[in-house]
Amino acid sequence: MIFELEKYKTTEVTKVSTWYRAAPVDAFPENGGACIKYKDLQIAIFNFARRKEWYACQNLCPHKMQMALSRGMIGSDADEPKVACPFHKKTFSLKSGKNLNGETCDIATYPIKIEDGYVFVGFEE
Ligand code: FES
Image 1: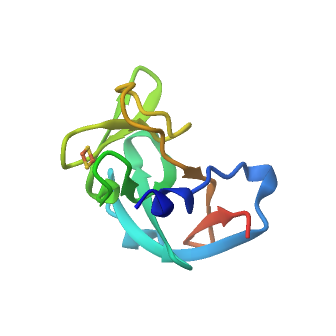
Image 2: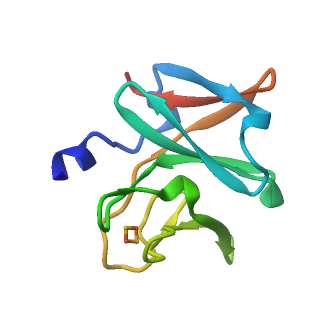
Image 3: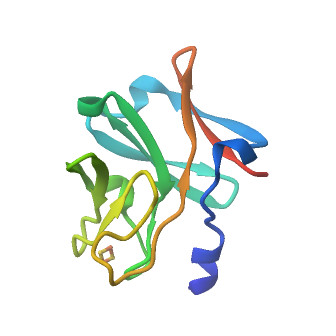
């Protein structure tokens, strides 16, 4: 199962080679998330309307390896946007992927952009 985690790598916007057209903007609930597939990856996408921001990260929660983060509650800790896994509430930064509880490993985050009413996620390959 650790192998599953290794498929997810935080991607810097400068390294993006493929902008994957995920879905129309209105497929994503305001202030909530939804999951898309890219190759063999499951990516959680969040329409953080309260902040007028979008975020993408791995859907896989590294705590007990549940495909769950897209169903997590999103919120802000000071200026830090975060998602809490619905299973045991481990919390991760949506910007850096850092585990904010300090006990589980971090998650991978991906660049995201909105163009012509569609959500695009950036991948290195
Ligand atoms: S599986 Fe996500 S917090 Fe436990």
